[in-house]
Length: 141
Figure (cartoon, rainbow, N blue to C red):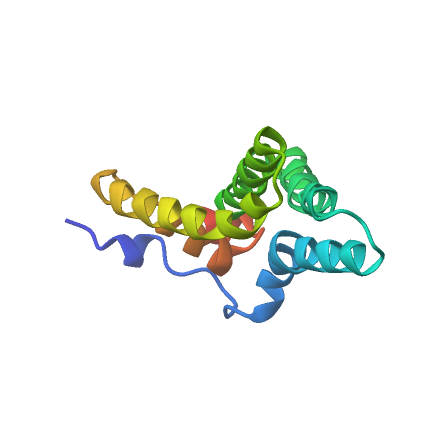
């Protein structure tokens, strides 16, 4: 039996923060920044939340066009924003915007636990995104 790493060694180059910057900006920092700027300008909380979801959506679209695959972290962020926005629109109460994070965090935890029964758990794909970035050689590795 052949050692898999001997045939397909780790890609050249070290893992660095630079690989994570686009994802961290579009999927984490930009939604927070957009939300806080709009709130500071007097926009309603609900609409600031909706606008914050544009950045991860655009990033997922950009990555899908570029590589024909979707990024798990971006999908999770968009899903959480959509669920929170829908709950607020249905209820007509901004209170759901404030408490949704607790329910969504618990839901994410249950998803991670449930994915342990899959061939590769959800966190595998999230960590791969951090380690490989957009480098197709690292993703294949």
